[in-house]
Length: 532
Ligand code: F6P
Image (cartoon, rainbow, N blue to C red; front, side, top):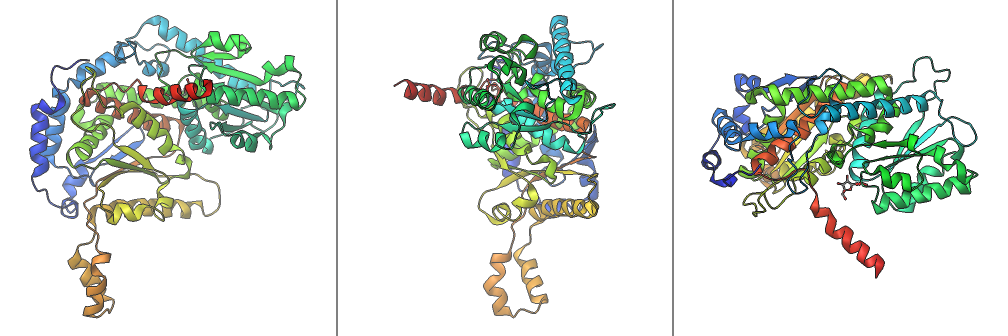
């Protein structure tokens, strides 16, 4: 994990620098070549990645591949999947891929890990099914109608995003007498209003709280959990029955036991799972309750398929590696230091915040593995939200602002919303996503703007007064990512596409994507202020 050379001293880095100084035809010209567009469109695992609107050519792609080779990416991937201590500052493995392995897999990590993962997966899935099938009952022997997830960061963003994304697939368990599934809610913010606004609508007799925290020491989560207990007791739950309404998911089971959680309602994961990589573990319990064991396992299999693709596919067709390399080209060479993520599916409403943690908590680093200050930018600033809403808010800046912003558009090829006219709605989203990628790439030259304004009958002086305002420089790079449809498998694949993109970029920058020391100082000062 400790390369001898800094990234800027690599031959490929210098080659890329030289290429970035050379003039490349404008994207509006590049897009006229159907052969280029076709070759930059890659499909696999229910996803399609269209890189045609990126400012790349064969030479750039070749140099990026060289960069990956010179950065010993192959060796670093091997280390990750062997369970070596890739998290160098904490001297431990980052074995989240082990969470999605399946029985019978030949695994490169220890059989103990594989067995522990399977045991815990089956335990929390069985619990999820019991809740879904109304077999798990609260203090008044009523089934749970509502599940509230209390957790923050990785203990919130992943499961919250997935529950929303797969809300198109929520269905009652087979053989269930009632078609009522528990509703799943999320509270992450310690502001009392956040909790109050959820619980005031709920019946304490039928509400289950899942307290999710890897460390079981996050102040915000513990305070929320204690207020949730208070609310249950104040609303009739006998204190000795509280444990029926409380589940803990943690890597610190000793602390959960000490805090009074029942052993049978503690689900564990391990210190080698980073918070932002933990939705594949018991942290996925709210999702398992929402979609059921079968679909949860399909979700894991979609993720695992992307692991396989990442490890085995040649790099010139490797989706996460290409996404990572093009991201480095945009960030480090074209100087697009902010990256917008614009999903065009309401199901992906929470995808950008999830990705913000994955990308920026992982790769927002200033020193390399050897604690040397980085000479280049690491993670870009990742921001955004639903694209169709963004169009009417901040897309102005993308089109005509002074920053060069790269964009990932994410859309669904097909959608099965049962509402009448849903297809019309979906077509509107698809059309807009395509239009935005095209508009950002092509722009509209001053010459074309003048022509268009003249054609609609404006006089020469009128045209002269406004043409500059209506000109679009274009040449803004974007990738369009299409999911065939939203299923547990395609969602799993999409998430791991980004996980390994982040890993690949970290490998090239020679940084540790698995620690997050940057969040500690503020926590410490908050504690000092509390104690003073
Ligand atoms: O403060 C950041 C962080 O440590 C994240 O990395 C983590 O996902 C989140 O807090 C929650 O931590 P925990 O699961 O231990 O409560």
